[in-house]
Amino acid sequence: MTVMAVDPILARRAEIQHIAQSTAERRQVLSRVGIIACRACLVLAFIPLVALVVYVIIRGASAWNWAFFSHLPTPAGIPGGGISNAIVGSLVIDAVAAAGAIPFGIAAGLFLAQSEGRSGGALRLAADVMSGVPSIVVAIFAYLALVSRHPGSLGHFSGVAASFAIGILMLPIIMRASETAIRGVPPVLSEAGLALGARKATVARRIVLPAALPGLITAVLLAVARGAGETAPLLLTAGGAQFMSYTPLKQMNAVPLVIYQNGIQAYPDLVRIAWGSALLLVVAVLVLSVGSRLVAARLRRVRHD
Amino acid sequence: MARTTTLPFRQGSSKGLRRFFEVPDGAYRGVLGAVAALFAILLLAFVTSMVIQSRSAFAHFGLSFLTTTKWDPVHARFGALAFIVGTLETTFIATLVAIPIGLGCALALAFVIPRRLQMPLGSAVELLAAVPSVVYGLWGLLVLGPWMREYIEPTLAHITGGHFPFSGPQIGPGLLLAGLLLSIMVLPTMVAISRDVLMAVPETEIEAAFALGATRWQVMRKVIVPGARTGIVGATTLATGRALGETIAVTMVIGNTPALAHSLFSTGATMASVIANEFTEATEPYHLASLIAVGVLLLVVSVLVNLAARLAVRSVGRNRAIGVGLV
Image (cartoon, rainbow over all chains, first blue to last red):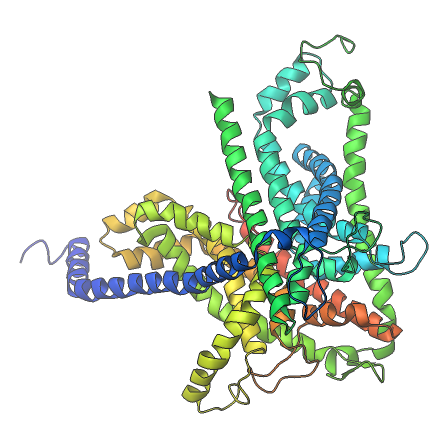
């Protein structure tokens, strides 16, 4: 007899080759079916998402005109009117929220990037979990802190309460993203600064933060984009208003609130305003998101040249 | 020590600011520590204020708050079971639809479609994840809702013969619409994170599988998906967490009926939607406390889900920052 019959390895090889060949056709067919299924998933996922974008652009653009941006809202049933007070309200609310959350978040990001111990780990986990807490729950906290009547609270709906809620939602995003950016700065840079006798604060201000700037900008813009789109917190805090209000200590209107409140009405004019506001909000959020990438990419290129 | 030596760095723009940033090391560390402590205090205040304000509801209704469905502001009887069930139903529909489609979509984006389409489509998905939920809500109410009423619900009722859970009037707004809208909303998150973890599977393992004669589908099923398993579990859990807590879009399309639904076509409410819908109109103390108690439940559930997701994603190790900006 031949060697093949007694060598178990060769026998096994022959067996595997036989199986591979006899199943080749079936496996090829299955592979084709599987890949078609993947493509089908891609199409299926993009149909509603593309439909969403198309509807927002078409219906929203038809609502846009000069009055939409410059006029105050009109009462239900009266056509025309705009969302100037909501645009101002959103800008003020988000600016105040960002003014609080950005320095606080970057400082906490510095702390996270420089601490490896237990306190750093706990804070990191807290920030991670915090970024997944539903915004409506944060809204309740802002309501309890600044809207409900008790000493130390404003006791009424206000732009500040909305800023507080949105700032809390921005914080964990800024913290974690700026930590990542700061950790990306080569340690030799800050070590060189320390070796020259600079204080840690100086090294942070002159070396670490400037080197991490592209990442920091991305972090901030992402957080602002997310904050600007939040609606649930505004519902419990801003109060909404039909009039123009520039002072954050009073009730304010905001663009996401207009989308929600007008969108669920039966009046076509109010719904039209809602679509226009939706387009405005999407454009603002996408400009912030795309802008963050472009700015970061550009800064990185400038650095490397 | 050369602490006082002037550094040869560019002079700052503002003298006061410069001085602030050149504090001694101890003070610098102190400031950062204080910021970190302030964040911890904020979280502590967050949790304690929620617990204190909801205590009267838990104390007054006891376990029946979790086990009864009666939600009656007029007679001040509150049980949250209908909202818990509503949240579970909508989240279940959302994940049932979004997980397989999202995974297939991520596989297609990473390995199936031509290379020159991968980047633009991948970026498009990430941008769609940034679209605010109120915009999804508006579209769900005014576009997807009528589609549901005219096409999807009649078809489902026809196929199942109108039996449970596809029975009753086909009106559009309701649990099924909320669930489907949620699935559309979590898809970009699901796809973007899974695509990242799928692409992180080492090229060598994929090539080794091809060298052994595996087909493309076999490589995807036996090598790539198992290799990215923990990351996919993390993405799934994060998507689930988002579906659980999503508020405004659900409030716009679910119909806001505070009762157990008998059909997926009927209106209902979730934990998040009842808070958004009733909070500012709750004048009766037990009503407000009960709504805050629902918020506490939601907080506990979302913290647990997110902890699980973070642990899963973190164990992928080198992909630590994945999804930070998306979630």
